[in-house]
Image (cartoon, rainbow, N blue to C red):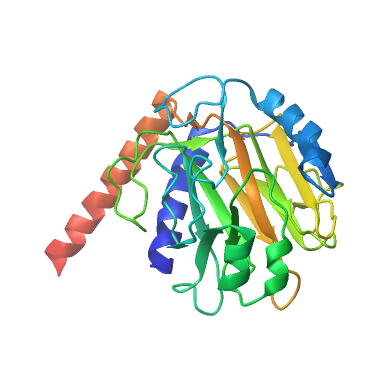
Length: 293
């Protein structure tokens, strides 16, 4: 599954890279806040929502050209059940346009995404202290069985209908202009971070702001909530990398995810012709090899 997922992501990235214009540099607007409770970060979240644009498009199918998408992990505010999902996690790819994978080690096939209340996470991880985790929107949080890297890719909502659980998307790849997330229990600057990549795999975070991997650290507030969001001015965001917690260290959960309406990547006619010619050439070469064999 992992090798198939890598090949799939490389193929999509090549298509999008061909379609997007090149950029000599990236400029970003950063929104952040941290504090003891939801009210402490509410101004930063509301400012980010305004920058992403209104309305909140909910589950409306695309393509849409204004507004934003949000994932609060709460099942409409009613669900208190503990839900575990394997990677890849496509539960929100058709209705919101976000597709999640992780890079767990050494057993990626059993590393799971978790949606649960703080008490549910405490039971899952046999750690009663997790029952004290703060939420931004009640009642559930989003976490991983083991802290590590999460990848978020984007698709036009409504173009991935009928997918089986854990299946790879088949819809229209998309980019977003901004992405932000709420974190719970970030105790130190190294506990959580966000990375923003364009289709070529280049960081959209200016070198002066990010770490050596081009990621922005989330402002810490142990036992409280933190928010970090970025609007990209020069490039479209093709992929977001989320670091949440550390192996054997502090446990970090997440709450609301917010991002601009995913926009389909439409290649220019010349790009389509080039891609079509390339694929035709590859197909002809494969046919000739088969005949020779």
